Length: 430
View 1 (cartoon, rainbow, N blue to C red):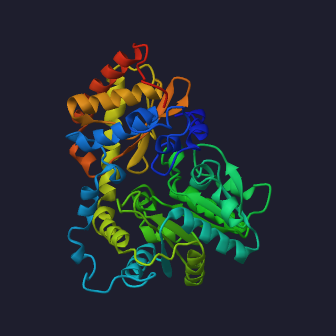
View 2: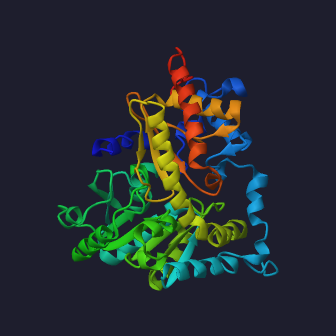
View 3: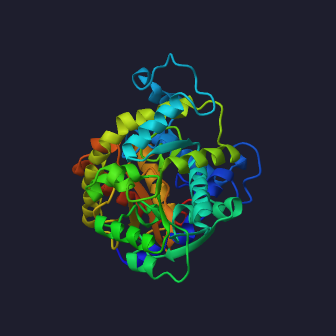
């Protein structure tokens, strides 16, 4: 896809949460119909979000069933067999000991770092990491990408809460280059790299490009921090083990729910002195929770069950991406894009030349009328008459052959064309 295409999500993504939903969909804000009671008082966006959740739960076949759309019963089933993950006759964790320490040791071992600290959220973990580095470097400026997660999705938390100042190395739909880092016009104490860069299409640099960028930051006496919420699935693209990838950075944050399907939680990994200080700030930020064993056990389950399967998911994502591209071509769409054409991870974007309301309605009707849900995530406006959605291929996606995808695409496109001809085909704006 062209560089200009990759720029288009930026204005739209500032209101989205980590799950990709719009804030207005979860709060009911932005419309006059959100203040009443019951169904009549719900905004169209909230009703659509609830309908999408019901479609994911009710369809007999879904390309991706994200955990945040499951029932409580299905989520609790994650802990079935937990006795194989940790001795359940041990005392419950209290303020970060016991099973929490076991998870921290496991993460440090996987990433090849001296230590790791469990955090309830990645937002907290990264703020703590970068404020600790700022104290060491004497420079509170963090260089990052214009569409990196903290810039777009965290309500200016770096500056508002932690007193950090951000500068944008680039706004191009790719990771910064070594030249951009080396030639940046002002000093910075830390360079934060999001691997993969989610809002550009879950894209990654080559290994040589990544090592060159890190070296350029070090030439400027800056530390390097990886926003590795999805670092777990980067190994196939780089052709390197996790500890070698993490070893490029001074510190790394990883998530337990984005790829590993845990209940939540994150970890900050790095030198022991940094992690010890981070645990002090974790307490100050309100992250010292008395007991966290359900979330921690789900993280251990993800490391045990999902992490080994990620290479398989990445490989099949490329099969699905090819089938989608060929399906849209066979359906005769005037313009359609799968980005990247060959996914770098098990997640990627699909762009189509229709308003997002039309695409959203077509996806929901397909699920409700056929029991097959091809696009489980929301569609977002990418420009006039242009929308995109995100695709994640995990265990349920492995059940889909290329032919399955092609048939679902053909049916979906028929519905899109029929709706596009209706006066109110989109059933409201996204």
